[in-house]
Length: 401
Image 1 (cartoon, rainbow, N blue to C red):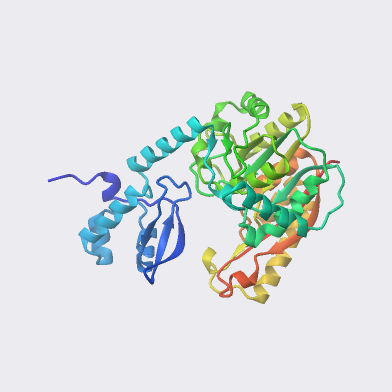
Image 2 (image 1 turned 60 degrees about the vertical axis):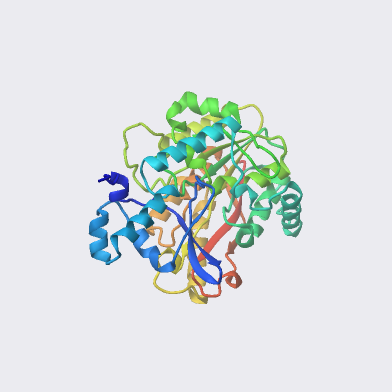
């Protein structure tokens, strides 16, 4: 009798994004793998979602079947399908991740996934971004822009704030390089994760900047680059690539994923670069670089509503309360003191789930700049009439002192 592999018999599901789908007039839930390891999406009945979320490696299949009353053969088939889709931790995931990184390194760049947010082709992306920029007002900030804070939302919900931020970039001199500071939404990296690889897009490959990568490696060692696979499908970096390629063709873009400094590292043993180390190393590297460096903090703000675990739908009163909280924290950020900003977020328990305080604080510290709020926005109510999720964002220019 064949022995069931341990990772199948005691299944532990990887993070995934549930997506509503309809096939043959039947409603289902697609389990989107953020890393897109297989290029396909597994679809399950909505009633299976709770069971799948409960697979945390703590019970065997037999125990799960007894608890849930799901027939063992059906449960085994479901878990096997999850494994084949790369959605379980274990040897199948390890193999798929290794194969994906081998393809990525051979290409010299991460594949275009989120970078197609503006369009699948150069013409489509150029037209979409140009249209958004044409609608944005000129913030008239002059040439002192050394960085921006801009969303990592889709363009339907965050396009106006992307455009407002990048309109500020257009008023400054062309930089020698861009540093994109993203958020590690689904990866394994414990600490800051960086890459020397470029990013593909509808405009072609945007290469990484070797000079700043070298400077950071001299300061922090190769531990900064150990978890490069975390960039597979990481939208907080990819969503900015079309803007950079469109407005700054030929300018390289170095990318790093910055953790939340208010959460302790799982293993604080020096094997990974910490937030505190990285922000100092980045500041020193920027100072040592020839030419201008533009820093992009890819940051969404509040995440509120049933989708994020809140009990009730988002209505007008909730939107008003969230804006008050957001504007209070934005005022702290505008003070230019990154430590005071972090203390304010920490003091309020980050009640509305700002997801990118790490890269915002690192960008502010590394540039030694003065933030200028250009505009604030909330995801449109018209796109979510049920009030299931509210995400807020801002366009901020970081101005040289």
